[in-house]
Amino acid sequence: MNRPLSRRDWLRISSAAAAALATARTSPLWSQDRPAAAAVDTSKLLVRSENPFNAEPTLADLVAEEVTPTDRFFIRSHGPTPKVDVKSYSLTVEGLVNKPLTLSLDEVKAKFAAHTLTASLTCAGNRRVEMARIKPISGVQWDAGAIGNATWTGAALAQILEAAEIQPGAKHVWFEGLDPIPEKDGSVAPFGGSIPLERALATTPPQGAGAKPAPGAIVAYAMNDAPLTADHGYPLRTVVPGFIGARSVKWLAKIVVSDRSSPNHYVAEAYKVVTEGTADEVARAEPIYEMPLNSVICLPAAGAKVTAGRVQVAGYALPSGKPRATVRRVELSTDGGKTWQDAKLRGEAVPGCWRLWEAEPMLAAGKHTLVVRATDSTGAVQPREFPWNLKGYLYSAWHRCEVQAG
Image (cartoon, rainbow, N blue to C red):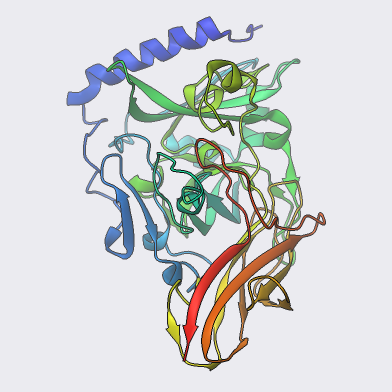
């Protein structure tokens, strides 16, 4: 029987991984630059940082289609994009399992049934620029475009874990990527995430007539009916609908089953809602998992001049990450939130998946403050305000857009 991994075990493993990554800088598996092969054409994205590379689409491009094209899907990186040689690549499954696994990409495809689902991924820092207006915040200054809705294909995480035979006492599943993240002390360490085991084993309602229940998480190898690109995690990544994007780890190399959440920096310290950032506050705070209910106006653009009369307004709404939650209603105000009218929802109500919406309010000549709010199937209503936090995470206040009609 394998014993649970302790923090000491994790630090030992991470130190070994860091050393391996540090010496691998001349290896074909590692590249300081974004790999040219299978890289996304970023000409349609707004680049927020070059190194690491982070970019988002314009809001108008974002809502042009219900399924976001790969070249308009945001890119979130914490370090250099690894160049992976699929011939030598393998995914390992270890920890509290009876049968540790080592799988090639081809074996993942051959040994486990393929599942296809549509799900939205969102950076926890989406809309950070709005929260930064309350009080400055460091980090990538995301507008509201650090979100995308894609069709993902891969193996159910639950089936992989079943093949490894989970041991009693398991409560969490850790993920480790191949991207080498520079640390403050000059070392490098892999990006990591983790999710509760119950989420890994969960299912969601079927997507479409005749479909079977969708897995709560998948190990994906395809995005929008094509192999993952280098920027989006080739050859494998996790996709955990409803959870912040940081839990959908790219360039997946290792899965660890444990009795506790991962001690990786991006679970144990980062991606927590804190206001001061003291060691005690960070230690007490729980890792962020579920995304909050949210909605955004994408058309017209903020500050736009529009023709008085019927004006096309459109955007997206995202349900909370709670199990089975879906978008139920979107309301638009043209007077700063004093009165509301229902917007028209597009597409189907699917857990972990956005819904695009549209409305055509009548605007008289003059300045108007458009405001949107959403309600989901749990009864949750998007809040008017959202409290500031040190990292600018989960901002989900009513979204406002000032326009001039004339």
